[in-house]
Image (cartoon, rainbow, N blue to C red; front, side, top):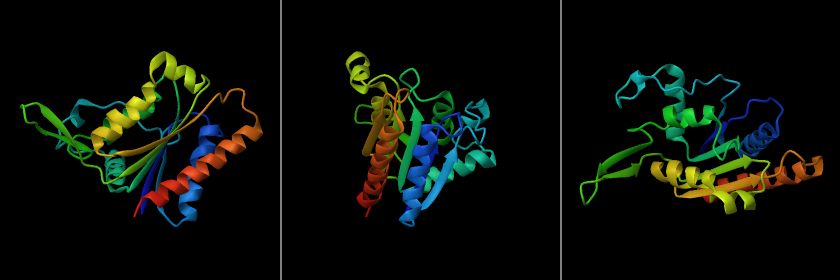
Length: 199
């Protein structure tokens, strides 16, 4: 099976990096094929130029590779911090550019003539792992979990991925090594579960 792992954190050695490294290690330990991208380390350009908007646009080789990999993945893992209840801008730009209309999703006419989204991604399952400093229960109580809505309903839902699992680790800023080690064990368990859910 093939897995696409996307990391969006600007600081090398961050806990997000440790999470992504754990995911990749677990996938490879089960002999899965892994496409791994550290968007900041690769200087991924999040800004979509006008020339890319058309469905038949000729894409630059870097973006074409991202589109091909995410299109062929059986499972997807996204790792990022919660900034302003949103993904970092570089990751949102990756969604804009790599999850393209005509390749990740399309629209067809619905029963009443409205546009109806149809997911085109091969992936059937996704794991989204986020870190934060605000307790998750407080975020949900105040804001209704905007990140959950974004990944589960907007992105994965639109692209046809119905099995979306999340891990939220918080508060990271005051976490001790023992806590982080326990969180990484949860990442291992979730990653192996991701593998086991696919036929």
